[in-house]
Image (cartoon, rainbow, N blue to C red):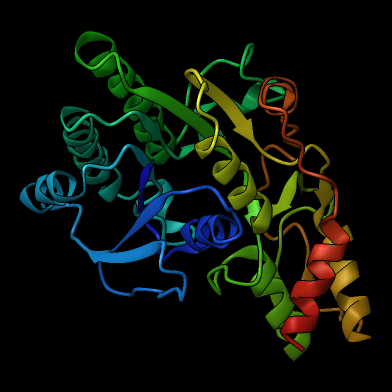
Amino acid sequence: MKILITGASGFFGKSLISSLEKITEDFECFCVYKKNAVHSSNNKFQWVQCDLLNADETEQLIKNIKPTHLVHLAWHVPPQQFWIAFENITWLQSSISLFQAFCENDGKMFIGAGTLAEYDWTKGILDEKKTPLTPSTLYGQCKKSLHEILTSIRNTHYQQTKIIWPRIGYFFGENEPEEKLFSKLIYNIKNGLATNLASPEFSRPYAHIKYFGKVISKLLMVKTLDDVTFNMSASTSHSLKEIVDFIQKNFEKKFTWLNYNAYPSTPISLPVETAILKKELGVEMPDTFFEDLQTMVVGRK
């Protein structure tokens, strides 16, 4: 088995590599980076530099490695900016070229990085079998379109390739970008900085990033896996106030300059159905939210 991971030096990529390092099955793993490689002492992992937005480089990369499995995590995702960025269109185009090169070189399993933003968030729950796919952002639309286009290409030309499409939810952890919610809250509370927040009742099913790697690495090792689209998310939601109060307690501080309701927060609640993940794939993300958040806070004290 030859695994190729794009976005290998990113938040999700690091989690996947960490999980794969613990697996004893025989495989080779090629980790693609553009600027920053995160080298592993494990000789199963090789780091390969490539600009995936360059079609010629991408095609040559696939021809040289001929991966059997491709996990495509690379995308333009600067916190908050990615929702409307025109780079979404660029990555949509380059991802199609990557997929075509992969299939033409006998690729067997493609694992994409979908998003919960593909759904219509006004329907009250995000359910793979019931909730309409009507994205409200350019990011969500490009991800939805990518899945549809790749499926059409595969059905027409490359029926040997399986497409696994996790719609990725809310993940946090020690290696996340400093601009993301949990990192920002920990830093601001620790340093007593004024912070504008959404409604205290704003809640999402957050999961630690370690579970992302565990799920994807498990799927990579399943030899009989068919096409599957599923929500990759925790099942239990936690409110912004719960999170803030927990972090404040850890620092033994109570601030009055945490400004709730500073900007709209719609929808307040966003429950996610995870039946396919649990029942069809046999994977469950345990609710270790506060233990994981505690570890993250302690690491930044």
